[in-house]
Length: 228
Figure 1 (cartoon, helix red, strand yellow):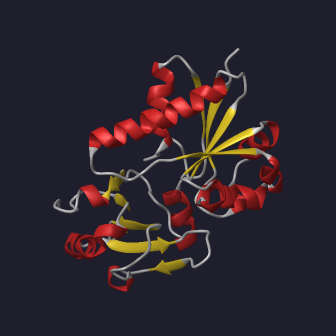
Figure 2 (spheres, one colour):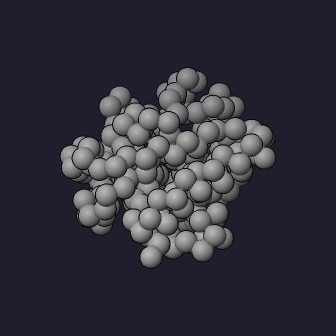
């Protein structure tokens, strides 16, 4: 019988924010897959290892998930990664694939999931605490109140658009275009908070767009709220 793939969110960075289910699945299964070329260098692995030291005794599988602009090459890499997991599943073993945050929000595992399910394999997603919920808690602010909508925006792909949405805007993937993003934030009239490396070493909290450095790290998340 084929095994099952679990796409397991390990949360935003603080090992104490991992779910009990994530911890249990890591303990119960032999094969742990991690995005990247070297499993133990992965941020997701390091978070999980701090909560579940037994992970070091597991069979670790590196699944290369390159960041490419060439869509055809990217699809080929994802297909190769899915085939790599399928070979393990055909042996009857389950695979726990670790991913930062939650596996349903801008997650690299989603690309593998599409191929795996198309090939008839069973996939189960295990939710983790999202980066924007953790960042809001770290900044000490509610994401939404009363009837306010919440918009989650991949900022790197929307730098040419004005930030005119009502309610609260969460800007993810901002770091590579931070200077442009900051201009949009200033023009929006919204109050701004940002958290860099939430729950990780080097964590910093910013309470104004001006405070955010143009060279802020990859794990920088921005929250822009209506100024009441």
